[in-house]
Image 1: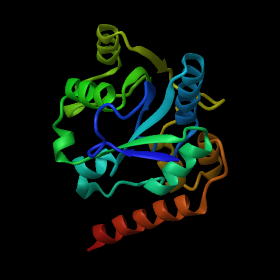
Image 2 (image 1 turned 90 degrees about the vertical axis):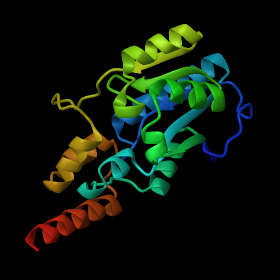
Image 3 (image 1 turned 30 degrees about the horizontal axis):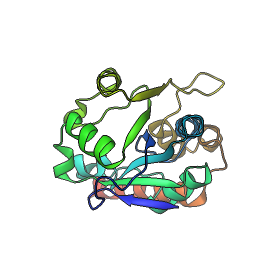
Image 4 (image 1 turned 120 degrees about the vertical axis):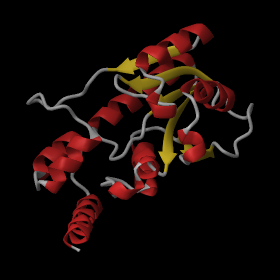
Length: 210
């Protein structure tokens, strides 16, 4: 596994790439679709497949008092991403400076400047930039302007029609619906994930009772 720490990565050091965008907490079936598309595009176009994620998770900075239910630690996330086939991972340190960076600046400085993106893969609801100022429509427009390819992954659902998301998995685990959590993850529920969420819920309840 090769990890790029973007705050210290010089421009011009990464070969032409396809960049997969997301937070990837839990690396569930929806995330796995993104990864598969990234690998497909990379193979067909002789590009380096790179997955971009954040440390810490954005909501841990934007709403620190909410004590986010985190499915996977950074190490767990990276190991799962590697397991599903992407060996190059770019990490943006999510701090207040990045929080207030516009989507256009992130697109030009990080995706094009540092990661040398020639194609971008993102989910249908992905947003980035200050207050999520860049949605999929704006991303597609930016890519068109720069001659960059883009793949948008549609919603991924369970056979019963339930939307797969990190939020839905958190809710399933908290409600002890472990079968649903495993269905959305596409693998057995890790004990560490289950224990972490349950401990966070207990911590929240303890603070409420004080």
